[in-house]
Every structure is written in C-alpha cells, then in structure tokens.
Image (cartoon, rainbow, N blue to C red; front, side, top):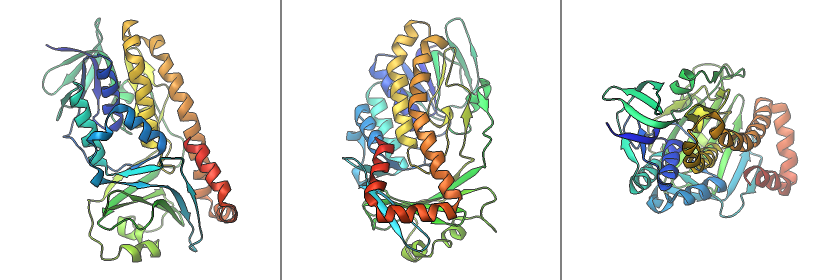
Length: 365
C-alpha cells in the first residue's frame, strides 16, 4: 500500500490549491474526489485581485483557457429604480472565470507538479493511526500522515471531527446559470430587489453568469430561476431570447461555522473551514489565500508530527483573513436585508463615488 504525506479530500479550487502548494514543497500528495473533474458547481466565478495574485503564485494561470474568462474592472450596485454606483478595483482588476475552466487549470497544474488525483473515490470514514490517518474508501484504504478536508459547505469530515457548529443566522440560498451573450459591462453588477439580489459576472468573451441570492422565507411564492429573474425587469429584458450556456445549479444554506480549523493531523480549508455568504464575491480569494497558508506550513508541521500545536499557525492565519471577510460580508448583508437603509446609503454613494471606490479598495486589498 502506498502511503502519502498529505491526503486532500475534495478536488475543488481550495483542495487543489492546497495539494499544489504541498507537492511543490516536496510532499507526496493525493487528492480524493468523489465525482469526476472538472466538476461544475454553483459557486462564485469572480476572482478579486488577491485571488488572482494567489492563482498566479500557484502557477495555474498559464493553464487557464482565457477564452473561458473575462476581465472586469470593478463592482457596480444597481438599485430598483435604476440608480447605481460603481467603483474600480485596484490593478490589475478582477477576472471572471467559468468554474469548470478554473478547475481544469488547477487540475493541469496539480498533475504537472506530481499530485495524484483519484476521481470517483468517496471517503467513507477515517481514523487516526500511529503513523497518521487511515481513510476508508469504497476501494482500498488510503494512508497519509495528514488529512486536509476541502469537502465543501456541507463537509462530512468537519462533522465527523466534531468541529461542526450550527450557524445561528437566517438561511440563505443561491441559484446560478450562464447565458451566451457578450458581457455588456466591464463591471460585476449587483442588482437589488425585494428579498433577493442578482449578480452578473463576465465569464467569457460571449458569456455572462447570473446568480441569485435570497433568504429563506424572504421571497414570496415559488422560488425558481425564472421567477427570480422576473423580479429584475431590466435584466429579464436584456437576457430575453439569449441561449442558456449551463444548467441551473443551486447551493445552500450558505452560512457555515466551524469551532476550529485544525485538529490532530487534520485541517479544514475552503468552504469547509467556514463561510458567511457569497455576497462580497471573496470566496475564491479567501480559499486560495488560506490554502497557500496551509500548504506553506505543512512541511514544517509534518516534521513536528502535525499535532494541533504544529498546525496552530494556520488557524491564526485563517482567522486574520476570515475576520475581515466576515465583518464586511455581515455589514453588506445588513444593507441587503433592509432596503430602507440600503437605498439612501447607495444614493449617498452615488453622489460620492470616490467614497464607494475607497471602501471597495479597502475591502479587497
């Protein structure tokens, strides 16, 4: 039986990023994915400048099909009456990229640096041994010195490790679909309506992604992609007759809480490590930044036995970046949930766009 230094469960962006960082530092690394890759999932497809820089450090950018992506220069908020405010991101701006294209680039880079990728391999259980971790799969056990869980919002491994905490907040859900149309704006647009937001992201030379986020119970009647789109007449008119470019996919509840990111020979990364909401579009940047922190630490942590104390620097690094993301996201959620507060705030920013741009740059810096 082959033994590994690091076993990563989940071949999403966070899991592949950890694996790449570990492998480039000389660690024998395997990624276990229950589906096939690249997988198409409902997720944010906008890379903010920090995420784009982290992707470049990963060495994955040369593998990215640029025809499956489109740059954007900033964020635009659009109110119900059509009033809007926009702000530019710091250079080089952001990149909207189709999830499957991003995953393909990360898979190519992972294989190039020696990561072993096992598809259709579901982890059924895990246990600690004297040498590390033993993972039970439908095929044969996998032995590793360290286990990294990158198994998504609902993370079975987070729950199995006793790190699951109930998120005591209203439940939010998302739906997304793509359309074959040239992006009409160099900005990611956030449109507001009663109880729901719509997010338009350039995701190719002739593709835009449209996502809706809403709170459970906040939308009356049947909830579906078409019924949500009908709440945004301007978007509905613009997309009328346009050919869908993907299936409708959903996600949620979005908010997830973990009591800690590390345990003995175990770490959480990506959405499995904790998540607030997709409203700010920082999910990929957060995942890549934290994956880099963990991957950089792993050689030293494994040399010390990968106990909790050896992994503690990753917990501290995670808290440093997550705290800022969580504060910003919760503040924007407060505005989104309270139109009577949000409308005058955006109107003030319309008159002082420099202020909105300054706020935007402080968030993504």
